[in-house]
Image (tube, rainbow, N blue to C red; front, side, top):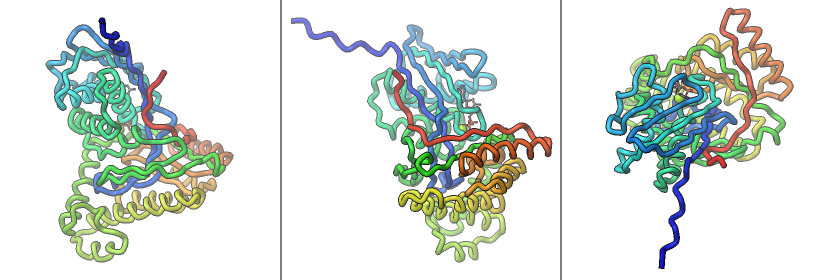
Length: 378
Ligand code: ADP
Ligand code: MG
């Protein structure tokens, strides 16, 4: 008797993954610490379909020309210059091949609405949507932690961006109306209530349009300073010093720069855990001062803000924000503010006017709510 037909392979697999903003917990990820990102209602859709030739073809609605690479050539360093963007997608396929899976010819088609390079993690949205679509198309049966690992490997080892891993965790595990408390040592995640509508609040994002340059060396310098401070303190990472141990740690560090870098990370971990505690107990309105303190720490101790983001925070606080801070790696990027919805509209206009007065690029403001993580379309 003939066996029943095999279920057909999907003709194409289409998955969407979100960008994120980090509510609090900045530059703590590579210190084995804590962060509290939420997914935003903007993301990237990846559609994967089979090709008969042994090539990987990557197309994006946000890029002019498609990029094609022979599967035999798929390794770090092969996609550079005008083709570099395709590395975020090809890197995921490469990471799958590195795990011993045989890759067939594939076409990956991308379409995203996260502004590129603004610090809202268009890169993780792209990588995570591709990881989930490839997993589905190739029937790999990967769990969500493995999707995170593939996406991180693409960004760190294929593209060569030494980022800390929060973005991919958020893009995969985020949930609607929740922020995700991430323990970056264990990679454990805990969804924590963050229902802005129920609290009658708005989370305003201002993309300052000030250039965001994570790869210009400043990020690496901050990371190296944190590692040096941990080494001098005899701990595996700055995560292992808590607020109580801070005064003694500062006494033991030999120079002012290391003291400032360590103080930011140690106090930021504490603020992040305090913020999660408030949210768990339904006190969303009370997290504002923690957000503002985080900004001051990034400005004065970690020294990763720029005049545009400091001005946006100042204006939003003057317009009644409960709290405001830069979010993301720094040196530009976005500011977030927790505000009454009516204040948020006025605040965004006031930031625009203040920027025009200083001759800065025109900022873009929009409210976000906490959205779902990676999911299948259709
Ligand atoms: P961020 O993640 O903050 O947006 P990154 O510099 O980490 O900034 O990543 C931005 C880069 O990711 C872009 O310059 C581009 O190479 C790539 N990228 C992101 N989204 C897309 C997309 N939809 N299509 C093509 N490339 C994209
Ligand atoms: Mg990125």
